[in-house]
Image (cartoon, rainbow, N blue to C red; front, side, top):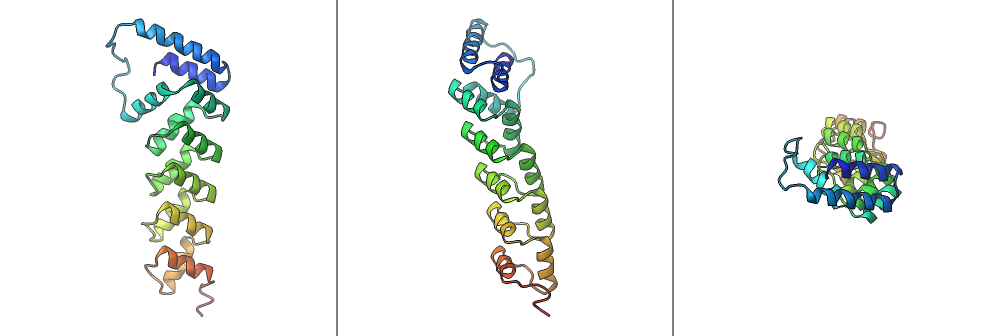
Length: 196
């Protein structure tokens, strides 16, 4: 995607031009680019793989897709940052779902840094909707629960199983418990007082 195309998309997202105006501007830029000689060298040098994919994403957008992104408030910077955070190809619909659920690139990056990497769009949304964040994942991992899946983190959170509960169970002699066992113990009120 050229700088001119990027600026046009930014103006569309910011509401400074209409979809029709953006389409005409993009057509004009494309016509000008077609008259230039082939094989011009990009002054920025070779782009990294994700930058290329993001550029391909923007270049492939239709006017209707740009309108949808604009109507839902999805900005170019959100798309760039979320693409980097999730490290996967995302559709217009994916960006809109993530944005509407309030999932931020920082939220995804924090989860990844905590050990919950390679999330799908659905997993990121579910974790966010249920309140599971990077701190919760880090705490559980520090308590020894290192192999949990995103769906298991959600179940643990929903049932009130946290790092303190895991440590409490270990103190009572319950070690190496599976996620289902931890949930069963928590749901049935097993704690230090119940075992006295």
